[in-house]
Image (cartoon, rainbow, N blue to C red; front, side, top):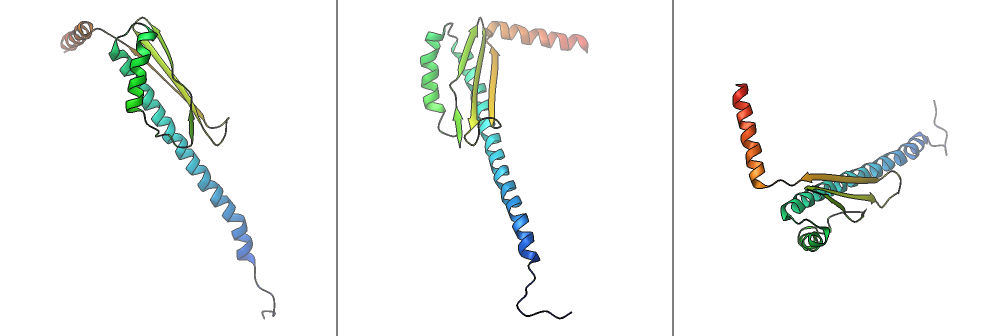
Amino acid sequence: MKKEKGKAQAYFTVEASLVLPIVIASLVFTICFLLFCYNRCLMEQDVAMLSVRTASYGARSVGTMEPKIGAWQKEYLTDKYYAWEMEDYVMSYSGNKRTITRSGKLLMGDRLWKASAESEITRVQPVTFVRLCRRLDQNEEAKQ
């Protein structure tokens, strides 16, 4: 076959025009998904740490707990979230149980990129904790 003058084979250009947008879109989606996972993990870690912190304070009312938690948040929690909008913590207390919930969303969309984290912790007295540990040890010895 002879190649005609003035005509070029353009199959490579057509393939590139179809493949390149798919590759770029998949890279953008992967980056967004990884940002979402990173921020969600940070949020879960912060909620868990805050629940442990509230249990260690031992305050019985929200009014006495709020200033301590606010001071701890200023010292520990920094601006480490990327492209992420956080809502405030929701704390509830019932007896020795403390439940902390927080939610947030990636700034790229409202529906698909939302997440929430919840942590519940029960505060026990040190004497009660030691007794529970001894009971567990005795049960283990009885089984053997």
